[in-house]
Amino acid sequence: MRAFNVLRIDHIVIRVAEMERSIAFYGDVLGCTVVKSRDDLGLTHLRAGTSMIDLVSLDGPLGKRGGVAPQKEGRNIDHFCLRIEPFVEAEIAKHLAEHGVQPVGPAEENFGAEGDGLSLYFHDPDGNLVEVKVTSKLPPSV
Image 1 (tube, one colour):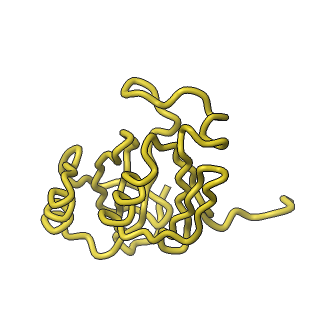
Image 2 (cartoon, helix red, strand yellow):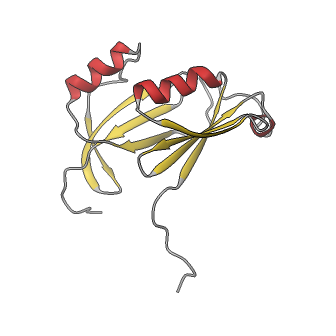
């Protein structure tokens, strides 16, 4: 028996080159809101539904610990996924385009924490791959 059970992802930390640009992206494009900032650490906490996205400036104390910035050919993570509703591909693509963001490709069916559902991928200003996903409301199958 384990001493604990994983409930959900609490937060992710993303190293960013330009804090204000990233705050604007995650706020304007994804609707995340700033909860708290720690300028002494170069850290901004954003609310993303029931989870948090923490942005860490590359030139701040926390960001410097991660070494050089991720490049086009090397990243810290492959991608992260945000569960959204509703999922109307044309409306999502239009919203992204209004913010100068293009989907990587058309929506595709993927498996996630709540089972299969449609996903759409795009990049944030630092090149991190973001997935937005809806569930099909069917029980997960492995």
